[in-house]
Amino acid sequence: MLKGIERVTPVIRFKLRGVEVKLHGLRQDNPPTMVSIDYELIVDTDETDQRLELPHRNVRK
Image 1 (cartoon, rainbow, N blue to C red):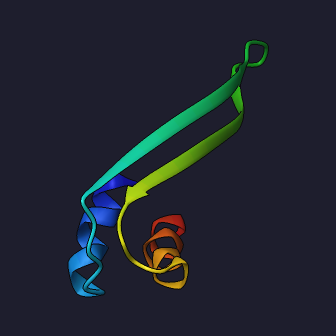
Image 2 (cartoon, rainbow, N blue to C red):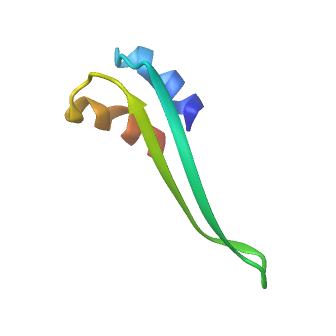
């Protein structure tokens, strides 16, 4: 996720001061599998909400 943001921000001229990713995964033991993975992207920026959606959309791809 961080690599994706790092790659796309110069291309779309997105200004940010920092990014933090928080992950939470739920694992099932039998059979071993990941049931769910949730994430939270925390971006320190002055960009508008509309512009903030651009790197997030790119990271989801």
